[in-house]
Amino acid sequence: MAEHVLVTGAAGFIGSHIVDALLARGDRVVGVDNFDDFYDPAIKRANLGAARRSDVFSLVESDVRDDAAMRDVLRSTRPDVIVHLAARAGVRPSIAAPALYADVNVRGTAVLLESARDAGVKRVVFASSSSVYGDTSVVPFRESDSAVCPVSPYAATKRAGELLCETFAHLEPRLRIVSLRFFTVYGPRQRPDLAIHKFARLIDSGQPIPVFGDGTTSRDYTYVSDTVQGVLAAVDRTREADVQHELYNLGESQTTTLAELVALLEGALGRTASIQRLAPQPGDVQRTFADISRARAVLGYSPGVPIQEGIRRFVAWLRETARPATPVVPSR
Ligand SMILES: NC(=O)c1ccc[n+]([C@@H]2O[C@H](COP(=O)([O-])OP(=O)(O)OC[C@H]3O[C@@H](n4cnc5c(N)ncnc54)[C@H](O)[C@@H]3O)[C@@H](O)[C@H]2O)c1
Image (cartoon, rainbow, N blue to C red):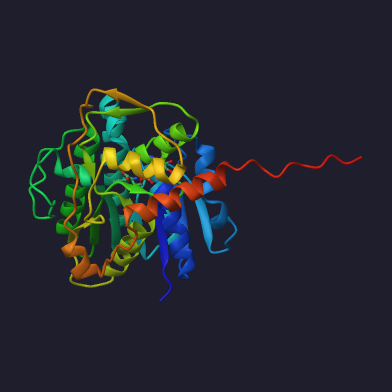
């Protein structure tokens, strides 16, 4: 059944893939994005290149913190469901600007939930993060873990966003909300600040890569098509009347150390990395590792792209996008 979906953060890395997937399955989509300067807004405009050609996609350039604008867009478009991805992302930059992160990620989420409630929108999917688990050695991470010791402002804002979803669903029983904890998502269009993208470009151009710590930190890297599959399943889950607020991990449930990641990139790029070893960074955690049994059981989530294949696909995309434009033959 085709639906009308409003996606915030639609022009970003994950948001643009979700928009494309929703359009591909026949949904109508309204994207909301303020094209902030966290990275080059031209990249975000390019991310929406395919969607902009669809006549069932529209874009609203607006800030989720602007309550008048959010009320307007929700009242005029009346979506069946909201996928709320708009945020300041990134663990390390949040240490330099905690108030900005709180403003966008916490107040922005509160404004959006309040506007949704007042406009009678019943269903919301919220993008949270594996970072909410903090620096714990208890693995794999389960949704039932307490997650009360975030070690970066970013992580704290994402946990606060989940708690706001919990509260709104409690106070307004018509609201059905699913929060998803994404585990380091990568793939085509990945944010340029993230390790896989940054390292690949540096290795390819023969420059040293900054490696924080001894290479033993590990991450549960998730290929973006698997994340998208989980988000679409969560959108469908919010149709069920028994949902109030539910939490799911979306990872691969496979971990890769930083040293292994660098080796995989070297193999896919066909080049050797030069490593600039730096001290571990405050805010970073030693490991992330998702228990995905709840998402498998309830959402039918079934991630299928192992890191070796995902890195090959990422490098193929990087090479494709880096290819110089076809030279123009001068007319005589
Ligand atoms: N990429 C990951 O590995 C990862 C991991 C865990 C959680 N997440 C979460 O997933 C979501 C998407 O992340 P991403 O990697 O695609 O990041 P991204 O920066 O590429 O996308 C975020 C988008 O939100 C927009 N935005 C920011 N502030 C806004 C505001 N105030 N109003 C409207 N739009 C705004 C940005 O312009 C951007 O297009 C975020 O909520 C992020 O916290 C991402």
